[in-house]
Amino acid sequence: MIASQTAAPAPDIRFEQPHDDAAIEALLDHAFGPGRFAKSSERVREFAEFRQDLSFCAWDQGRLVGSVRMWKIRIGDTPAIFLGPLAVQSEQRKAGAGGLLVARACQAAEAAGSPLVLLVGDAPYFRRFGFSADETRAVLMPGPVDPRRVLARGASAPLVGKVRA
Image (cartoon, rainbow, N blue to C red; front, side, top):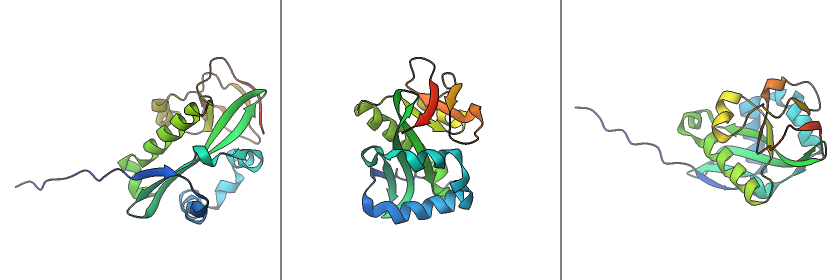
């Protein structure tokens, strides 16, 4: 006899709230460790305006299992949104929580009139959400970064310039 398996229910995706901050920071510390503060993406978050209205948390039975944050930036003179960090509890990674968060955040950005989203990440993972490095060769991040990991979604032409507030 084969035991029946049921898929775990999808986490509840909600807008980030101010009171979620401590749980998010704990998740980020667990996911990325202290090295997260040395990354080029962190330099962006130091000067960019946080967009809580485009940022989401994934909850499972009252426990934070994922988070994605969004930031208002410019690439040269072009307005854009910067996605990151994206973090998911290890046991939820295979369950699709990260994908749900990315999709919801990108939908929210587009609905808010900001279809251009930039991030630093793994192309094989983010490609399914429409991200690529095709239009980002001339994007200048603050600090060192592998240019193949600078990805954009919603670019209608090559992006040129420094990432700034």
